[in-house]
Image 1 (cartoon, rainbow, N blue to C red):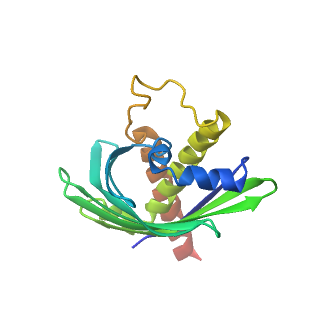
Image 2 (image 1 turned 90 degrees about the vertical axis):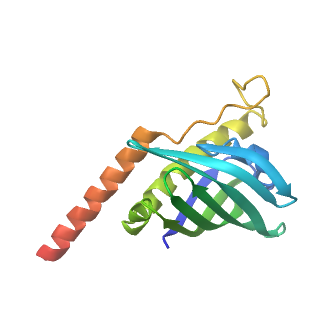
Length: 194
């Protein structure tokens, strides 16, 4: 059960960032490899996340529920689960986020845990999930900054106003996995030598 933590700053007022986070369809447009498929209740959404890691592609379909929301504290918790039917992988996640005021802008903190089963569980055991989470958070933050700077208007959108979802960048994720693995191996080697 890997724990993840990530954070970023954004040059927008905290109330504006919080309001944006309450619009799930808009938030999804900032999430790499994610597609919103529907909404089954006021707080539950169906979606798909596609990840390409080297020659492996995992397409998780499932749902996410906003389990808790505190508007005054600007915090929320999301429970999500998904199945990659082709690869036999499963994922469950509990993610919390908090938006704080910071020097006229905002500081966004994410934390949670992810449970993986199937072939991808090996990645979870090696500690690489945090490295991937950091990379995806950086991509999300950049897209969020661009969207809010444009006043929420999406550039280069398709005919329906939505950009087609693209799988999470395979080359970058593969590089992250390899570099993280090498760091851990070097740490183990030097740890044993001392």
